[in-house]
Image (cartoon, rainbow, N blue to C red; front, side, top):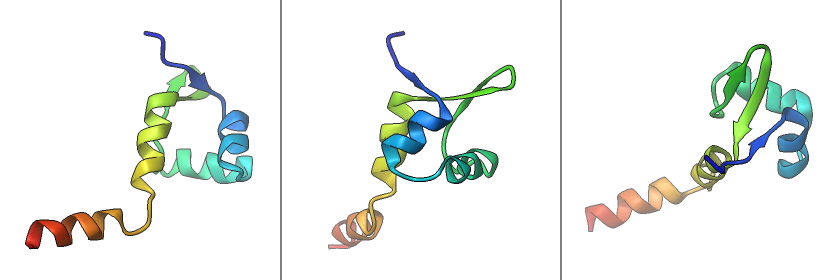
Length: 68
């Protein structure tokens, strides 16, 4: 269990977006997160997976390749 946990401000800084945007992503369950009491943490591996899924066109290209 060596996975790093990030706070909201750390994720915001890493993604170069506002803290309020990260809070919105958490509240709408658009980004995977863990609650420890009232504290929100985002695991490093979950953040990396989520970020990779945000690549524009990746799913479209994968589906197109399957059709061929």
